[in-house]
Amino acid sequence: MIATKTGFNPDYSAAAPSVAQISGLSGTAILEFGTPWCGHCQAARPAIEAVLSTADLPHIKVEDGKGKPLGRYFGVKHWPTLVLLRDGAEIARLVRPVHAEEIQQLLAQTG
Image 1 (tube, rainbow, N blue to C red):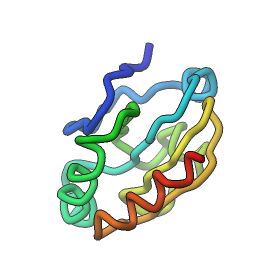
Image 2 (cartoon, rainbow, N blue to C red):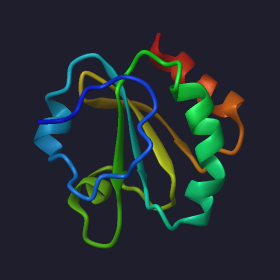
Image 3 (spheres, rainbow, N blue to C red):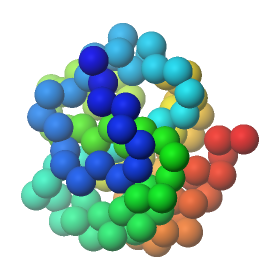
């Protein structure tokens, strides 16, 4: 089962949901790939937190790495990668955000 708490999620989960669990989501969600030790992830965290702390959507934060099936399914190459989902399907993504405005523009694509 995927945690569906809305707003900013501070921790990467080593136990990633399955592709089937992600595909079975309903509504809009943000799926974030990265690691706690990644410098780009650490640099992006303040902007992500600023935007998602007031967002009314789930933030699924997954620790990615070599051989991790969910990251490979989504073709993640750089961290952090934010994937905007609607009903379990990708509708947009943002790689290595630095500014809150970039994340706000991503969320604006929810329609």
